[in-house]
Image 1 (tube, one colour):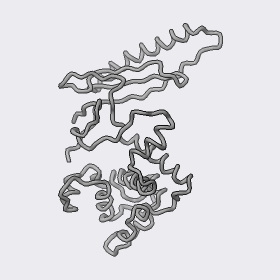
Image 2 (image 1 turned 45 degrees about the vertical axis):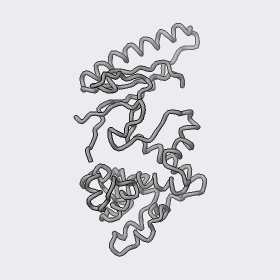
Image 3 (image 1 turned 60 degrees about the horizontal axis):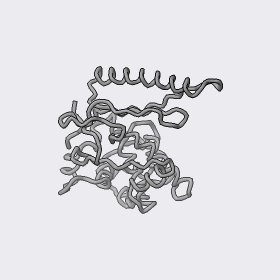
Image 4 (image 1 turned 90 degrees about the horizontal axis):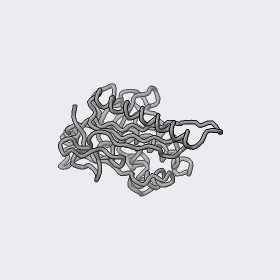
Length: 258
C-alpha cells in the first residue's frame, strides 16, 4: 500500500484570555485582536519554515470561538485554499475517542476491562488453536487500551496497518484487507512480549478495540463515535476517513508525500 504522509497540519489551539472584572468588553476584544494578530504572524512563519502546504486554526476564549482561519492550500495543484470548514484527518487522535467509547461500555456493564478482546469479537476458537501464540489468551481490553498487549509493531518491525500489499499476499486475499483481516494477521504472528509486561505503541490494539465496540453495540464504529461522543458534544461534522487519497471525504484536504 502506498503510505500517504500528512503534511497539512491542523493546529487546535485553545488560548484563554482573562479579563479583569473592571475591563470593558472593548478592552477584552482589543486583547483578543492582539493575540490573534500575533498568531497569524506565527502561523505564516510556521508554514513557511516547515514547508506545510496548509493549516487551519481555531481560537476559543471561555468556550466561545473568537477566531478561525485557514492558511495556505487544501489542494496545491488546484489552488484550493484552506478554510475553517476544510476537513483534516486527525489520525491517532482518534484513539482517545475509541478509549472513551470503550470506557462508556464498561460503565454500562456491557464490557469488562478483563475481557479478552478476541473472545468478544468471535475469535475465541482461533486464539486457542495450537498453531497460534498461547499468550493471545491472556490479552485483555485493558492491555489494548494501554498499548501493553505485546504486539510490538512500532519498535519491532513494520506496522501491519500500513502493509496492505503484504497482508493481501500473506492472507491470500482478492481485495483490500478489512479490519477483521488485520486481526487474523495479528493472531498469526508471535507476540513480541508477554501481555502486560511493557508499553509498546500499537495501532493493531486499537483496531481490535474498534471491532469490540462494533460487536457489542451492533453498530458501525463511526456511528458509535457519532452517537456516544460527538452528538453529546455538539460535534456535527465528523466522519470516518479512508485509507487512500481517492477515499477523501467531501471538503477534505489533499495529502502529500514528503
